[in-house]
Image (tube, rainbow over all chains, first blue to last red; front, side, top):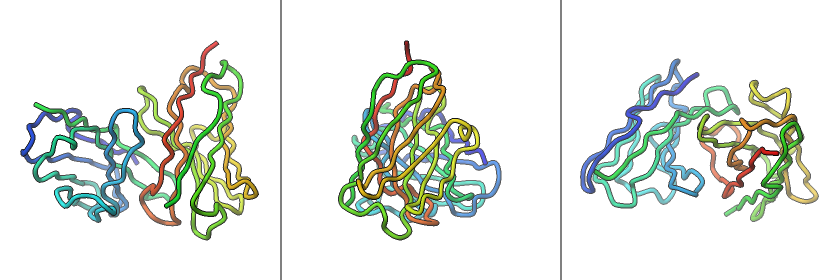
Length: 107
Length: 120
């Protein structure tokens, strides 16, 4: 199952709303997670099971979707939110597949 | 909270074998329902799952790498390891060791990652 993220790059200003998309080539039910990655760091888990926030993740991050279409929304961007975001599916446990990432940059 | 730390050579010659070890602290590697694995990240291929192992020794590999990969576990040292044979420049990447709980979608814990460069 291939995950396709869009857009590849998203340019926004602090305080704006960010909407990131992840589309699966076949249904993955809700077996989807989202990660944030900053330069030189490992990915950080944000969302699991498509819509559950991980421990310590601010409420401005939310996930939605099921089947083949998923969305990560950041309601009001903070300066520390500018990073690369990846979606990940695990419909065939334990194999893991990631999307190619969306770079969220400051406009 | 558990921590994972990769170790191993940062430079490997083409055609040789890449070997990395992950040391787990803050919890036993033999815990029920915990699975241990490796993920790599290269500019050309993004994030790629390599393989996963359970403390029983059961392994699961990415089909695209299966012929070259071995993941093993050493419970006496609370470590697990990766061996990737016949490496080429395409295997140059940051290698992460990771942990997951059985049947959960997400990767719960990541090591900091270690850069391995394949070059003569």
